[in-house]
Image (cartoon, rainbow, N blue to C red):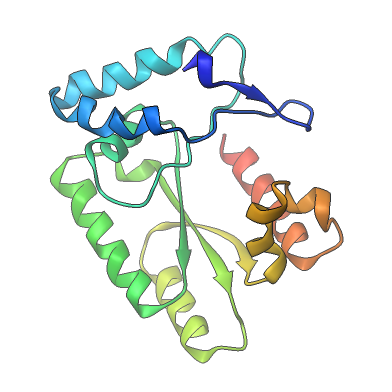
Length: 181
């Protein structure tokens, strides 16, 4: 893991970019038992503990051995949800996965992302999510072209468009998360 570590242009932010070598991680963990997979991931990440206060793992969507090991090893699991009926159905699949694997559902925190308040279906879906009983952060990240461009610009929205509504929302979201941590 240390060999993939890269500094960034931002203070106190280092990254481990996605690499082809990490694509085998799920397969490597799959051959281990649940406890061994969790311990293997914790061991792989433990070398970073002395140097970092916070480790954020952006894992691909899906219910895999890797996502299970991440859930087991994490103190908190943050999941963006787009306020649509299809996303809410997918969330039920995640709930079933967590229940079947006997994972700690209290670790799972959701937030609404790509929210468009002009769309009735999104308002209704967000209200349904609020009533679902899931741990839900209050901040909603608005749909914005600037959010989509972050990947192109390869910089945080708070650096490229600090006065945008989305940058403000991300700052609010971070404040909520910081209180949880």
